Image 1 (cartoon, helix red, strand yellow):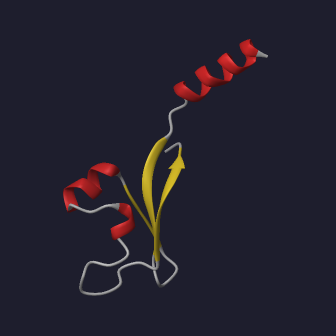
Image 2: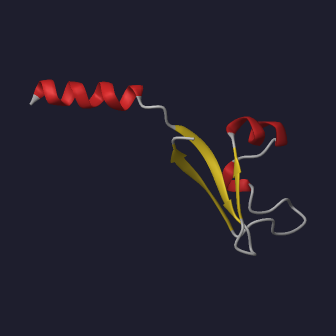
Length: 67
């Protein structure tokens, strides 16, 4: 059992997963932002819903995927 747990841990650590911000547009569109794009905008994923002047997206959340 211990060996199986170790193998699973190694596989999880070597899997190429990246975190990106997935925003759902109010018109049903989808937009993805990388961490670098968010940093360049000075924003966090949770702040991408509004820009202070109005709603940009209906929902923004982190999406873990292989891309």
